[in-house]
Length: 140
Image (cartoon, rainbow, N blue to C red; front, side):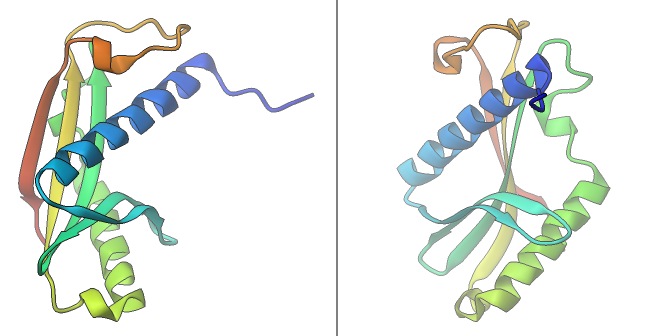
């Protein structure tokens, strides 16, 4: 029997990918170039790593809908921050050309102020949402 994911997991995956694409569009519109997407280490993942001039930004993307226990900008726990920091350090060790860059950690959040049907494939761009880009959201 095939391994079936619950509908809400599939929905969350689609919403997450949409949010990452939107965040990347925002970053590129501000002159940043994608270095790598979904960079993994054994301790964690960074959604987007972008660069502009001598600046390197590690970006966490969050999206939440009404009914979530908190707004998108409130859900990055200290333990998650530590994992992102360790993954960023791993990235810098693996790609030493970026070690001289100014590095920061940003969070880009998308909050949908209404419930979204979990069984329908959505074009999230057509729905109303609030977007927030938090620069220097946390530090080493």
